[in-house]
Length: 541
Image (cartoon, rainbow, N blue to C red; front, side, top):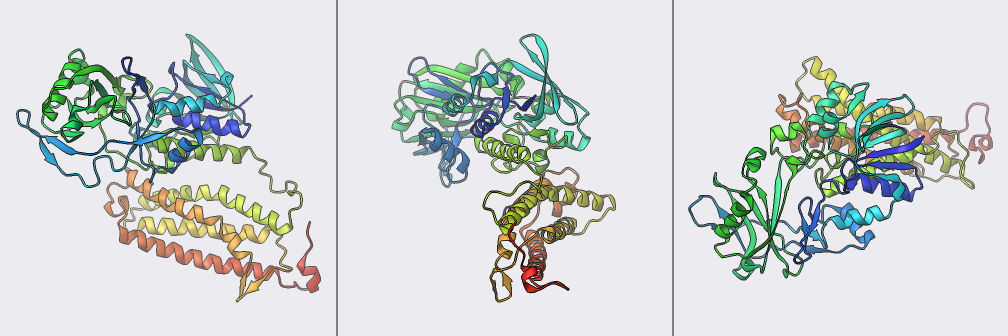
């Protein structure tokens, strides 16, 4: 039986496949298109060889460390997005554009990948065993087999069935909810959460035109422009030239909706070129024109994306999208599920990293009575087991918070419901952690105690650092995307003062837990009734 089936050959799916390959894990990757990359799409200009990105293209090193590190690992170079010169705005169809100021520049330190973003896709694909990669495979059904998942796949006009211990849907949640038949059906809360996650770029179109020279630069213009009048073809324009500016190009996002784009499809290149010249006020020698309407890409745009058009961007996804379903056998991936930078390439990598970590943890031996690591002391084994317990059980605290929040809403409570639910869920988790620590055979003989603090205490506290930050982030993201909380403004968007009050409560609960934990450890070092001090100290197993 296949260990992991990855559905979707975009950046998330390929990055996850590369992670599993490095770990020697079994997988197969299924892609519906006849190309790799998803919403990363680079076309080479026939005249110049200039790489044209019609999908994802920019990244920001200071806030996107995963992609920055991946580029270094793959040996790929990047260059700064050209941002120098005047920024223009055209607000009336028959008027001249005005110069505007944008603090920090339009792109805020963005960079582009030399040779196009497709270079990342190609480099990842080369790392993978080619016999595990499948294109032109449409996943139409998933069935929970209790200890595995059954995939129904349409491939080359035929239907086949694949069984896997787990499945990762590395594609937009809306698309998965709309196209795949789940058996049993996902609960309505999860389906609504998936439908509520806009697919980035799905309803948009991007176009790039190459030119003989970057005449706008010679005129002191950055190539950045915003067009806001009703007859606009582009609403945002940018310089899409190569690193040196030798291969000149302008790109833009179309202001027209999907239906109008289709109606004007034949004449769009002329309309676009005309707007370029009108905005920059100079004649431009057009060479080649490139265009991608993502609303017409069946593997990107769902019916709901097309219906709703452009929606408010969300860089943090609802944490419910990061919850493993069907007993951990079904994972939702793709950029839209990222805990940060959702919708960007960084979000796709964050999702891949999260799911890969879950898979590797789940496939490891989880029996806490497993044989100790050779040379490992009793305390080292107990610390390892406690840390693993915190990582596993910590994932359920957000779900506990959500249950408590729903219970409060059901009783029509209205005051500080986030604060109360967060605190009670955290306190319950801390209580369980104390019970777990009590059950482990720590050996306190020879362990230092300074000013009443056991040296093991900070080691047992350490696994909670990532949990506490993730807990706060998940709650804030859930509240801000929850339809049920939209009628509770104070809970929907947590004000800074409210967040600080919650943090004080959690900090107090954490301090109490830490005192109790320290006391528990000190108690383990005390002789019990009928024991001598030597017997109480214990011996290494």
